[in-house]
Image (cartoon, rainbow, N blue to C red):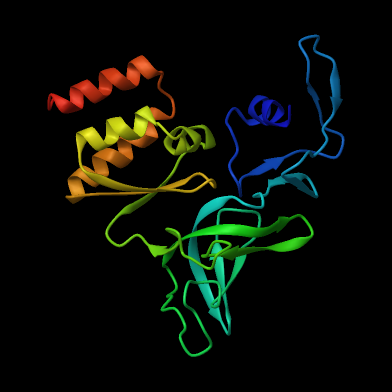
Length: 222
């Protein structure tokens, strides 16, 4: 219900970090009858004055950008209502003497282990066994874009037809975060740009429209 309210209000789906402005007495028609009710912040939302901030959830795998190195902790932009913290020990094989080589501006694939309205978000780049399992620094030479959470779920589906179609166009690498960020890299810069534009275009396309566009690309008519 809360997602429907947000879509009616701003005309688009909000992603983690997006702001939704509303007054303290704002009302919205929540049913077909047109009856207005007070706006209430549900799970994943936090009200700050006249704004509703969408916050990420524990357990999500997200793509973050390192913004600050401060002592034993990195600050990471995950597109949420505030930056997340990441300990230098939260990497596979990291010790006090063997610290990971992390720089400001690096991209990270990480998992949220703390995410609620009362505490600073906390990330790790290891699973429960202490293994990286695909997490950590990545992203050299690729392109980071923002897409809807609906498209993210389609890309992460076990048998994603969208992902299969992309890989048929060009051999490519994809990293997908539940915070609406996708990193893509192909064999050439031009191919990377084509795939990035295609992903963003697919957000507003039906399956037949997407298939038609893919055929045009394969035929070299795009």
